[in-house]
Image (spheres, rainbow, N blue to C red):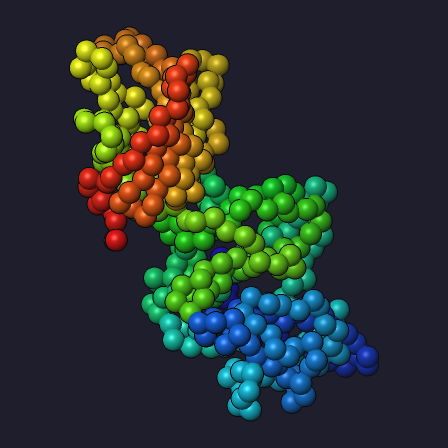
Length: 372
């Protein structure tokens, strides 16, 4: 990780200015969730004691395009709407030809209110790539160590070694190929997802900064991409639906459901009986398994579970035995759609090949991770 933006702000103050009519570019962003309504977070921002029309009534998660300012020293003050007392202020020096983002951070409870600055200038990415930067601006815990997160792809892979990232740290710009990215903010070990945005297209040649925002108390956790805007979210996958579930309509029928939060994936086992009373055990997986050409099935693109609903393939496994030479044959025999209402009740729609759909209601018998 680069040094925090506090260090960057200190460096900015060291720049001098001797060029007449020199210009810098400054974007201003509001990422301070200090009130529980968006209207309550509205602020008016002044520069060198004068209000700026484009910076009046700015609410949490809003930001400006780049504003042209003459090179030099500036006092930036942030006033809650209706107040004549600045809640946040900071001194910054701007240098000719440079681009900056100044953003309000903190919620005033878990983390102090403050203004922070980032240098936005970066080298032009190579053909087919873009520059991306990740900033942790979500003050969701008072203890700095408790704010640590990792940045991962949908399949749980860590992005650019971004693990144990604390509040107010930033990655600096790094290059990635242009394309559609499915990223998320998770606990350092990836076992808990905090923020899970929908896939977003990142174009070649762009400079994009991804801000994790919100404190989880006044304002929900979210993602703002500059200069794109706020990204729509999925429900983060957690372990609340983990456990053994009973099918209410079928005696002795049920399933074991196991979420894999790091992969937005669900796996498990469906158990029932045949007409002769013999037990049948099947497996299900929300990641559609692909044959690797060597007789092995692997999950090349995890997913299929959004924390509330899962679409899974249903498999019958036959063969096997104590010898390593015994072969297990896995055959897809149907599908199951799961829908959970909280972590205690759910529905399962079973579609067996060649048979009518069957809809079942289910109750969680264990609820080990349920807080309801």
